[in-house]
Image 1 (cartoon, rainbow, N blue to C red):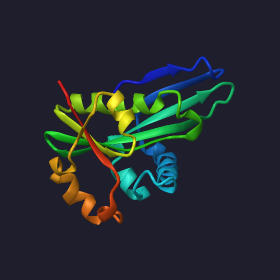
Image 2 (tube, rainbow, N blue to C red):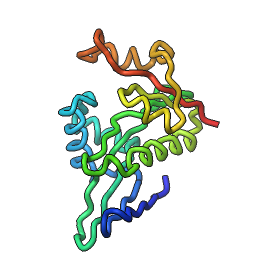
Image 3 (cartoon, rainbow, N blue to C red):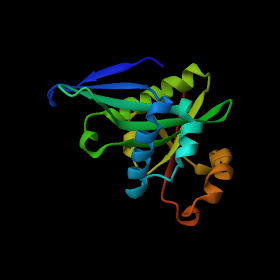
Length: 172
């Protein structure tokens, strides 16, 4: 995956880079996952699971001048369910960056990664249906993804009261 730089004219001297995660990012990814869990948007992911799946993660990294430190301000992952299906999951953006299009850039990078892997269908379970529809996803039935149901939904603590909507995109 190529690095993608985004300049934010409304935020002085901030550049965001969208890139594939590395093991050095695992701690910051874990912190953002924990934020998503605390907000009720994500299921927990153990730090060991994040490290084990690090090649599937994309990060949005802030490079704020004059600071020399880099901060991960957004994350997402692409889980291959089969050779023909992948899930966009664990999408979180730090609250102060949520209206700048960072989440959309992360999802676009994950879609490009699915294309590069030759996976023709990408889906997600979400409460942010409008966000995904703006990116070209369509609402569908959860039952279309038995791989997800048998892998994650059967162990989910809210499986009987799930309020997430399935969205799907067929890649060309």
